[in-house]
Image 1 (cartoon, helix red, strand yellow):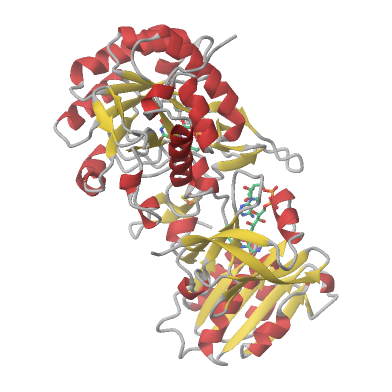
Image 2 (image 1 turned 30 degrees about the vertical axis):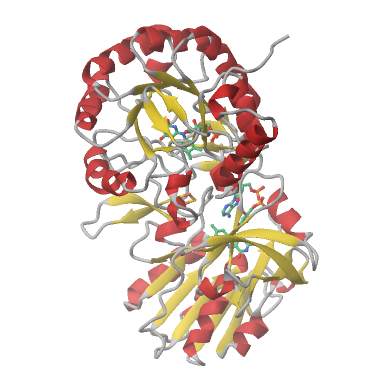
Length: 303
Length: 252
Ligand SMILES: Cc1cc2nc3c(=O)[nH]c(=O)nc-3n(C[C@H](O)[C@H](O)[C@H](O)COP(=O)(O)OP(=O)(O)OC[C@H]3O[C@@H](n4cnc5c(N)ncnc54)[C@H](O)[C@@H]3O)c2cc1C
Ligand SMILES: Cc1cc2nc3c(=O)[nH]c(=O)nc-3n(C[C@H](O)[C@H](O)[C@H](O)COP(=O)(O)O)c2cc1C
Ligand code: FES
């Protein structure tokens, strides 16, 4: 039997599948289907210092093989997360990653400080949310931005730190390198690609926010390419995500260089998608006599 | 378990109007969990997002849905034939609050494709109910016999006067007395119904729509503006806090 365990930034995961931030909430809704211990980890909905109401509806639009969202970081704030969600999540037997966002570097640092004394296993720095004017995306688009925010948060953060990168950039490998240089323990990519849809009858954008973040199978090839580029550039682990909906996608993402992968939009199509992906991955490893999932990482043989 | 997925077999398909279909599906696992006013997230093969469709009728081992073709997703659903399979995530949402109201006279106010979700609730009132249903024209009229069968006094309004009363459902609603109102339909209709109930100080429950992704409260996509007791506003979610809300709770 293949060993499914992986280690990211010193944190052991029972398997390489992590629920992507914003798609699994704080886990409760999916715990109705299966024990969350089946998942290697959960990256919680992006949290901010203060509660945020989020953007006005409509917030969802469908696209060919994907979706746009403009939720806008609706969340109950870090204190509520620590008091209400974290204690429950910690009992579920899965790795808990806190995805944090802010409008200023001080916000991010204060969030990291607040989480130091909690049971959170890892912090994911969200500097790539495209849906709020001050959702940190201004830090995520340039190398200097990524480097400076990562370095600042690093000083305040005693937890393993993963930086989530935006795909809306010229060269994602440069940004991954900037995060590494500033002290990140891992990088995750990709966040959503900025997109737009228009209702041709009303001539109004479908989203009230006009634009939103594209996710789902439509972004998968972009994500694989970016993970491949980033993984060649940095030594820290790369967590790959964007459009993974089958075990074949998961294998491909790991071959491109991912040490673990996150699943997002696929939860909406099929709540059991993660369970199916893990079963398929394990079978693939066993059939091909690959001793551990970790052995897939970076196994692509480029021409 | 509150909800789950089930691959359901289509038992029956009936065309009700040129663009509306009734599907009866075998759902031995989900049907016993369902309550009137809840909905299902229906998987359309090849599409990333499921389609929210209300549960119209609950049988011991089957569920009925009425689907109107609006776009590609509902078009594909409308092509399903008996013996075909369809993957449902259900039952979702809160459903209609019926406890305590069943001894009173209820009115069900439906507009267009807002009519089907109300049918399941009518049965709880054992004859002490009226249904006021509005449609574009005679060719769009659906489910009037079913509401009558559930014990409701049925009145119909059409926009063009081709069937029933020429006018709006609220024209009819004004003429009848009731203790509690359940409504589902287009926003302008819900506004008018809520205003009438507010005037009469009658409780009013309305079922809302919003674009959805997860259907269970995880993605926060299906936001709806709600009011707190102190008058301030916040975003709740149609799939988890609704789809049924008290009319004074929603910013219409
Ligand atoms: C709780 C609830 C119950 C519903 N019950 C019924 C029912 O019983 N019968 C019925 O025919 N319709 C019902 N609807 C509306 C139905 O979900 C939409 O008409 C349908 O999703 C349109 O999909 P489409 O692919 O045909 O259209 P498209 O416009 O091509 O859809 C594109 C995307 O927009 C979403 N969307 C578009 N219009 C709506 C809408 N009005 N509400 C929600 N999402 C929308 C779709 O789900 C899809 O993700 C209900 C909606 C909700 C929220
Ligand atoms: C509804 C929704 C909400 C999201 N919210 C967040 C968030 O709060 N923080 C974050 O870092 N990413 C968020 N994302 C991005 C996802 O975590 C992920 O990066 C993206 O969806 C690509 O993966 P996927 O195609 O597997 O969904 C969100 C995505 C969706 C669809
Ligand atoms: S559809 Fe995901 S929260 Fe309602």
